[in-house]
Length: 393
Image (cartoon, rainbow, N blue to C red; front, top):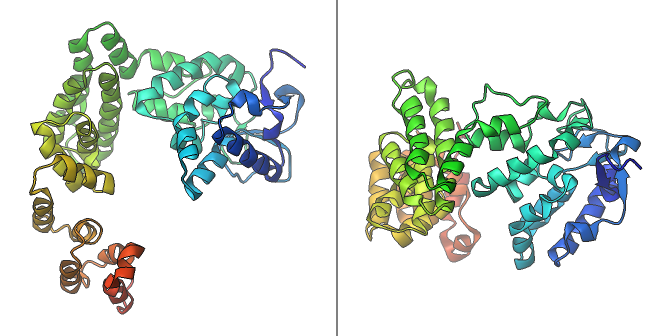
């Protein structure tokens, strides 16, 4: 066996059905406290075994042919975690990144969608990208044997992995694609790297200037003001939120919050910035955050934002939300609020009768009445949905 070649645990190599069963058993062992090293019984040298290195799946690649199903352990963890939450599985998810990063094969398991779901957060993205750079010579040395669930094989830099996702969140422009040298050159010249390094050296104002630069180049730019430029603003908002994580880690979250709040009050694509401010408010509640949590629910919706609004917002927050959704004619959002949060089913029925003919999307909210409310005799709204002959627009 070539000591310099990439080695992958034998339970990840073979037909997918066999690999999937083995990974389910391995995840259960991990949930009981095992480490990655403890679940590996033998190794396969990638240079000496057939098959692709599949990073996302289950894939369209022939399931009966032996391949390296690098995604399979993460996929089994997500499947078990989604099918039945438990303290052991929640704890396993919390340590998945730390389990995965120390080995090249574990790192490969983070490169698909399941790795994103399990482990990758803005707070740890630099750790992930630095490890990607360290492993790159070994991983890239495999050659054009990587697959993202398709039949073709490519070198790693041409696969749309979570490395590309993490680089984008650190401010690497989409036009700068990864080459054979891997992520290290792109990371070294990224806003995320600069913000982190400035903060480590105590140069908070220079770190803040990186956020202001994004504000000037995107949110204040006269060239990026048309509705067709929403994609650019959305990408910039995602980057601002990711860079805000560096300020939080360095103990300067209020600096990022002040800048993000100023930008959000002018424009907030898809509620991303107020959503970040709402999450910040959960640990840094102050006067400004009372309004942030209200705006976060209005712009982004969702149960987590509602819960934070109730906990940290003004006493009349729920009433204000209902009034504002009525003013905006956000009937679908209002139906969700009435059904899922204020539980005002009489108001929801009135809204249904007034608006369902011209706003059929509110049927979606009615169809999602929680089972507990159905048992309480509040399924009449759901039944009302089935009595209409229209279909969703």
